Length: 257
Picture 1 (cartoon, one colour):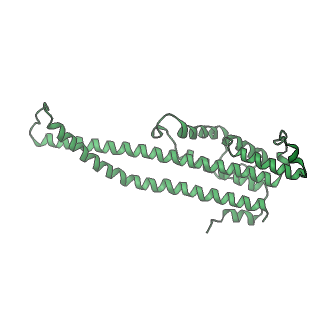
Picture 2 (cartoon, one colour):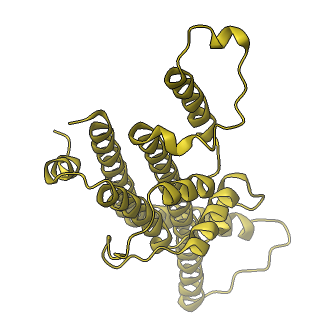
Picture 3 (cartoon, helix red, strand yellow):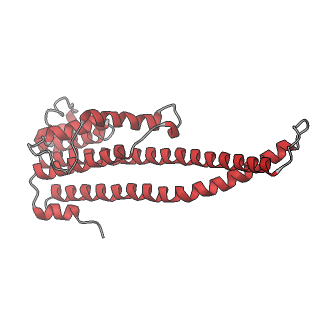
């Protein structure tokens, strides 16, 4: 394989490994939530019963009516309150899990776009000449240096700066270096939507930097899936555009052992 082909295979495998981790994280978290909700309900019921007993002993508390009906009412009230507290805790935790998964998926997509920019620079450095046109050099840097070496140094520095650029900027660069073909069915059931990508990019920013509690931010499962599908789409697009051989694509799809 060429250096570019090896780099593509490594990028594809990293994406696959990390995406699997996200799905495993969400699945295991939800399995644990079911048991946790039951335990929280039990603990809450104990706390509610203890609070009710304490309040009944407070000075000035109304006399407790006699009879089994009132006892059953208090028990039902305590169980309802405990179940409500447990359900609220589960909803809040579930929201945090989805928010964390979206941040992870966004980071994976961001890494894929940066790597595809680097892949473009590996395959065709001349495509980046316009982006490097304003680069300035000191005289001592030019002494004994070839144009190829200077371009590589400038390109490496530019890509390092690009690593800190917003996701949308890197995505546009990837799509400009590897234009969309007539085939849009590279990923079954997926259609690239730049507006939605921008919305999810802002949602990620709100989760990380926003003033509201994470538990109040709604993240849907298909939001997370969209970011993963977008990364997969870009990888398939680049693989098709570069016309990588079947052996290269097979290696990319082969899990690490």
